[in-house]
Every structure is written in C-alpha cells, then in structure tokens.
Amino acid sequence: MPAFPEPTTPAADRGEVFVRYLDYFRATLLERVAGLPEPAAGRSVLPSGWTPLGLLKHLRYVELRWLEWGFEGRAVAEPWGDRGEDGWFVAPDESRDALSADLLAQGAITRAVVGRHALDAVGAPGPRWDGAEPPTLERVLFHLVQEYARHVGHIDIVAELEGGPPGE
Image (cartoon, rainbow, N blue to C red; front, side, top):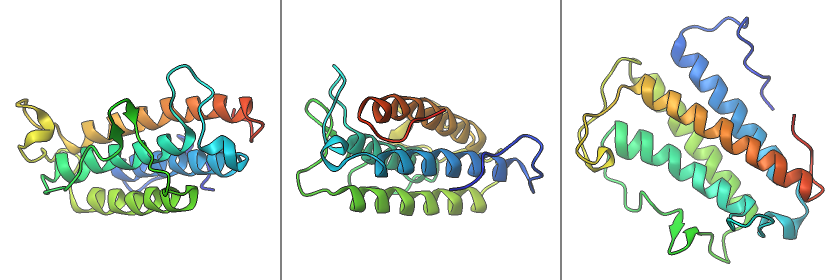
C-alpha cells in the first residue's frame, strides 16, 4: 500500500504528484474490496444497486476513457465496457482477482501516459469530448483524482456496512 502523498513529500514534478494520488486511491480501493467477504464484493447494499466489483470495473474504464481513448485519442473497442442497461455491469464470470488485476494494469498504463506527456499538453480531438475542445492532461488528471477520492469514500462506507476494513 503506497503511503498517503503528503503535501510535504518531495516530488519530481506535478505529474508525479497526480500519479501518487491516483496510485494511493487505487490501492486503497483495492484493499477495501479485497477485505470484503466473498459474497459482499458482488452484491449491493445501496438503493442505487452498484457493487464493489462494479466499482473496480468502473474505475478501470474511467482511466481508459479519460486517458487512452480521450486524451491520447487511441481507438478503444469498448470505452463504455463497464456499463450495462441498468448502470455498471459485471458479468458472472468476472472475478474479484481478475477485475483487480485489470485495474492495476490500467494504473500502469496511466502512469505511462503521464510519463509521455507534459501536463499542459492538450488531448487529441475525438468522440470522448463530445464536440468540446479537448482538455489538457493536467485537467484530465485532476478529474481522475476527484473521481477516485469520491469513490473511495463510497467504498469506505460499503466496506464498513459489510464488515470489511473501515476507512478513514
């Protein structure tokens, strides 16, 4: 588990600061989901119906959509592969281990994308932006940090309700 990226911890640049926060939040999410009893990872305790496994898959696709498909403009077969007709979708054959591995692999891709570009680089035009001007990498990373922080708060609550490790 990476240490919380304290503001006083030296970093090579702002890109490294963003990557550290993403790594920390990703690891926290994975730790909370790993600590859940097996049936709890795949069921919902909330009226919205999302599951911890659905959250793992969702955040993997969030990183893919914003960085690979969006910022870099790569062709992606299923940029919305985390969605079904009724929200986030996890197939019955998708396991906690596989979804966790997919999220970690996507994190490595995120780190590589950040390493290839300056924070003020503007993303490639494409369908991700729905006709708007593409944002800079810094804006994309800021969005990803807030998305992770929000969802880690969600999983903290669900984990506590399900008897898993409590959050902060």
